[in-house]
Length: 434
Image 1 (tube, rainbow, N blue to C red):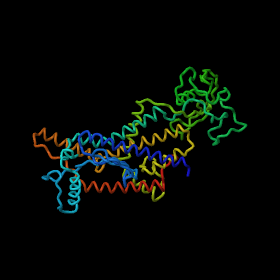
Image 2 (cartoon, rainbow, N blue to C red; image 1 turned 180 degrees about the horizontal axis):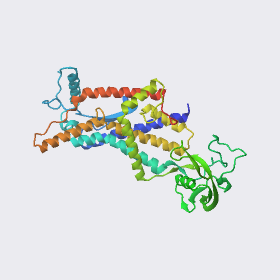
Image 3 (tube, helix red, strand yellow; image 1 turned 180 degrees about the vertical axis):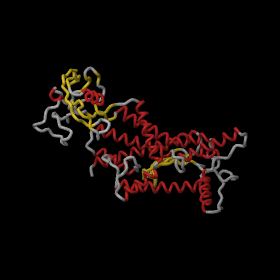
Image 4 (cartoon, one colour; image 1 turned 135 degrees about the vertical axis):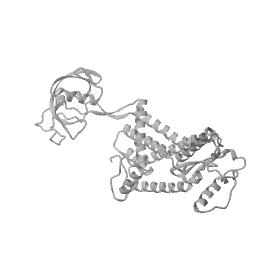
């Protein structure tokens, strides 16, 4: 196995661990600010690899780097009529027993003097801020990574610079070949003496700002002489070029053929073009919409993952990818033949996209996700506001313990989905080429 492949996987897992740690920090900081007692801050799951206690909180790292958590006391309120910290041993029915066992476990963490430091007794807006902190941190990380990518590195784009791969002969579109024959005529660019690295800057006095500008100006002109402004080795100059008419694929629909359009005979050069902060916001907004659409279609997408895992169907490039699959992509990026700049760009984009997806997934308003707790806090705020307007007694805290059976069912479904993604990522992974 290529050692760069292994390094890529390790780097991605480290980036994932840092993202998880900061996600949990997004919960931890507001929880401590609002006085909630936090007993554990853990990155990872499983047995503990390392931990250290500072004050009332144990900070640690666990061996399985696929998640993390903070433990806040009093996530569930006691039974109506019970004092905080009261534990009972009776329950009726399997679901009720499940709920009461969870209540008892939550109340056992409450020590004398902690009654005002439990999560459920905090104001509704404090609960929302605490539970929103994790996804918000993922969005901040995604924005930082996308800013590094777009502003610092840039996006690949075609520039009006003559590529070294440019053919010097005219090859009819009907002939599927890339090599010149002795009988082929030279291109107008070759006849005018254009060289690889020449940057086209003007066409008959009209400025060329992009490859699209150059292409449309050349095509729309048709056959005939033109004055082409270029920059060669930093020096501006003007070349007299006589364009010829050729049949070429349509720019918007390559299946169609445009007849007798102007033809120069050059290929563009791919460059990394740096973007503005405003474009970062637009780029991230577009991806957010695509991720939201994927989340809405998640059940359908998971059916596709099932078929890809067990029937050998092709993986959907817009479908979900697990940590294993993303880690493999990280390895593939570093082991590829791409330039160092492109490797860094794709790797940063992978981490940015993963943080964006994690943040949005956690906002789904279902327990045990952060979005479920946020929804509970918002509902409590709505109830209290309604009670004030209607001059009714203040309602009790929203009791999320009542939806624990649904929570456990969703958790089981999530574990099945995670297992399916791991299997699919092993037997039929998404790669950079597909």
